[in-house]
Amino acid sequence: MTRSPASMKEYKKFLINFTIHDMMFAISYGFLFGPQSIFPVSGAAVSGVFRFFGDTGARLSFAVVIVTGSNMMLAQCFCLAYRMSVMLDNKCFNRFLLSIFCWCLFYGVKVPINLFVGYLFTLLAVPQAKIWEKVEYYNQTFPESPYPILYVDPFEMFTILLFGFVVLALAGMELFQIAFVFFILRALESKKAALTEKSYRLQKQLTFALAAQLVVPIVLIFFPVSYGVICRYVGSDPSKMAGDIGFFLFATYGACNALLTIFFVKPYYDFTLRKLQRIFWCFKFEPPKKHSIVVLHSINSYASNVTANNY
Image 1 (cartoon, helix red, strand yellow):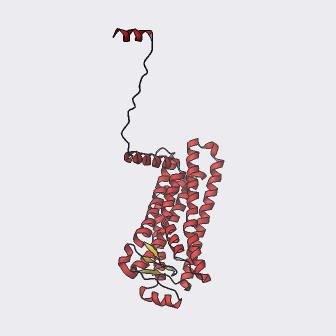
Image 2 (image 1 turned 180 degrees about the horizontal axis):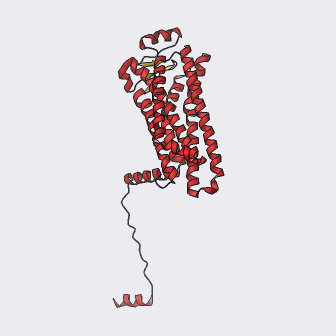
Image 3 (image 1 turned 45 degrees about the vertical axis):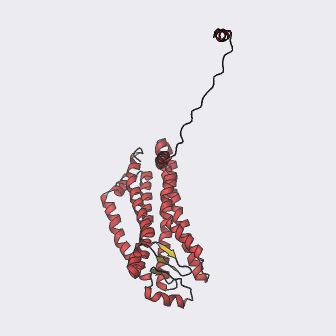
């Protein structure tokens, strides 16, 4: 990004903000939560750091993963908003997005909402002492687990309403971002003649990277969750393999975002490729060089024959 146009240098702030939220989701899901499937029960065993906090850890696991995942998508919206301000060439909107006031407003509004939403999701988790009653009530088999259990009753009205609200909010955010991407691409094509070749190419690469990242939550989160919800409400319990695959897809969410950015944006791709090549050559085993001996054929000439006869 150091060789990119000025607008792309400013974009680093938004990209770093998104990367931090991406990393927070990965830490929350893999390190703090560490879910293990307990299908067909609608929940997970908490094998991460939060397992040491018992029932409180199970509740916190649910809330932290939901909040960090939502924040990651919100940070992606922030990236798209800046890209749109560049395409609109609106200096007032651009200065506002880059101002300290905007960032303070972004975090000032986000933090209390996160605390409130996180608190609501802690209420969804069934206390450890009552999980067995819920499981027996629904005639489900419950596997033995040494870890605290995060269990959510899918048939409680509060659960249905809260999950419905979250799904609608995330779906609306996703549609909003898709509309942003289409607008940016159209604006980019209309201003192609006014941009340098380098600037146009980099803008297009970043837009394609963001567009590809919009597909990631649909494939890795919405599809597995929708499958589990549909199975639950139609009375067909999903298999343990399906649960393990779902948790694996969740875990790859953050990595996929980073890989897509590296793949689509040429400066990142070239930088990563150079580093990998350097690492590869450092550890590459080079066998000892073999020296080949070339035998020169004798020249059968009159001078050589005379010399041989004299000796």
